[in-house]
Length: 193
Image (cartoon, rainbow, N blue to C red; front, side):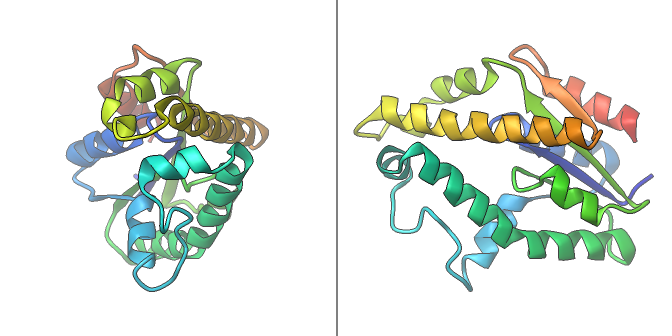
């Protein structure tokens, strides 16, 4: 079995939940690319949301700015992600790394016989349903509908980008729908290993 399992996907598709389930089943620790970003922010200014409250960021930025921001942020995370995968696939302990900063194009450069990767791709309606039912996400927003609209625009763009890269590079992916249980997705991944 591979020592490093990478689970990519857009926000709210279920990466963290599936990563935790895989961690429990395999006994591998699970880390998020968000954690890497949080640590890096303590030593360098890489966060596009710096200076904004979470809802204000989505309300004030234009849709294309949100896409540009996250693309730049993820590029800044790439060296740290690459180094982490290199360490854990060679001499380090096993690891599950989940996050939306994992792109097929990046992972292709990192893979070896010790690295397995899969992407969770949201089926139509899933991301909107999850954002709208997570009222804490937009509860404090002055313009909740704009926050939801802009967040979904960026998330759907990201989801489509991942799907296109997966198809173009013949990468592993699993479609996740509104009725897909996280346990079912984790079992599919285990069967792929």
